[in-house]
Amino acid sequence: MIPKEVLEIADGIKTMRIRGASLIAKSAAQALRIAAERYSGDASGFKPYITKVANLLLQTRPTAVSLPNAVYYVLNRTLSSSVSEARETAIRSSDEFIRMVDESHRRIMEYGSKLIQDEYVVFTHCHSTAVVDIILQAFREGKRVEVINTETRPLFQGRITLREIAKNGVKVTHVPDSAVRHFIKNANIVIVGADTITSDGYLVNKVGTSHLALAAWEAGIPFYSAAEFIKFSPASLEGGEVVIEFRSASEVLDIYPGGLADELRRLGVEVLNPAFDFTPPELITAFITNLGIIPPQLSVLIIKEMFGFSAGRIQLTVLEELV
Ligand code: RI2
Image (tube, rainbow, N blue to C red; front, side, top):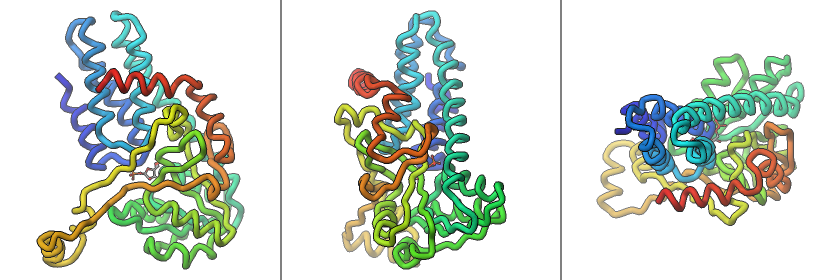
């Protein structure tokens, strides 16, 4: 039986109580660790059991590649170890994965803060732990940095960024998503997070990111995305497509006042709610990664260095066997 705590993590990812690409990845690895620790059956049943847990986690959210990257990291090692060592391998590789993600995060904080000069205004979108930590690192280094951040409708993750930046004493101006082009000229640099980066340098990030990139390009302002290696998609090398998650219409409608949402539903109005969009490499100055600051055209090098060229094929094979 899958432990309750593991089911709660899976549900937390699905309902976005647990959100943000790296937290999702670390939580998935943690869930596999808990599942392995709590397993009390015989050794021969462990691999099918952990595969079932992996499958459950993979089905929670479709877009951020950090989730399958976490699951496959643990699963590949576990499935290729001996029956007697599989459980220990699952525990060890979950810990190892989480340590690698934390270490990568520290590196991108250092690389990213170097891009922020004294008196810079940083424009960001949604809530990315990588971006917030880069800004706070620059601030701790003594730079007088300011931030402009978007609301990020419909779930308003921008409010998390707003609070985290403001409570650390950094000046932050909150703007509606629709005001991005109006305010872009007040910024020196744009830094956003990343959910998935393909081998040919496309960035998949919170919906609205591509508008911000277009506005930055038009205004001649550099556009960066902060991305640990787990945001890069090995499967994209094999032609694996990124699926854009469409979330429930109620996330959009339920914030409307009075009985308007119900009335609109009765009228049969269609609401579409994509959670992410694609930003093409031409609009991206560089990715801030744990291996350094790299142009989008070199994304494939991160995949080769961190996963190996065959990782995408292995991921897709494991996926086919799972379903
Ligand atoms: P970190 C978020 O997605 C945002 O799109 C953000 O840019 C990205 O995850 C990366 O976040 P969601 O989970 O890993 O809110 O930098 O849909 O924290």
